[in-house]
Image (cartoon, rainbow, N blue to C red; front, side, top):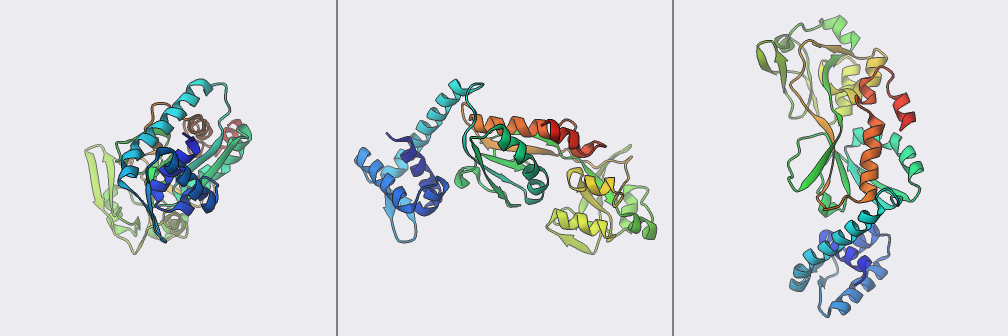
Length: 308
């Protein structure tokens, strides 16, 4: 049984579109259709219902799908079992990541990754929408939010340290808050859904409902508005480390840290054996970011990048 045909069938089951499934595997719609027909002929059953708009699985197709997925997983595990340490990672690695983090901290690292593994191809999707890895056909998702899907495996790539900051201009005009409670008298810039800020104090956790005149769903917009002096806000250090180094932003309430233990995670579907291309990506970027990550070091990471 042809593994490429099985791989196409599994993608077709997820996308319900033969053109899209073929495109993901770099084959034309006509070739994709021929592959599915060949698979049906080999099995002697009809696997899909075809219409002008989409494709759906037949009852036999639904029954065959988990077995096709198991065969592909076993084949990948078999390759990995003899390839770790001797076979160069190859093929297309499909990755999805948050837009801002991806532009700032994934794309700059790809040059070194692709130079190290010349047979590897990266298909990168940058979006702030949480996508379904299996349905989207992704090998890895980078996330810095709560992990809820227990069917996925997560590897921590770096801490996501968050700080309170403001611009020198804002602090000159409005003064610097000396306690979390003082934030009630300041303009606070909000990322949507994060109007309540929690702090660790000597008396235990304290949560403050802040107020402000600007709220947005984009982290870069929050940061840029803060640089422009529109108020106080929470930012991840990976987003503001250059602005802090240039003096465009100033950390405040440093003796009262935020109650947030967040991380940059790489999540991937559970398999019995990690594919070499996935392992290569994870190991490379864990080293590339460093511990502590370069955005939390005085040098700003140039040495770490060159070393990786």
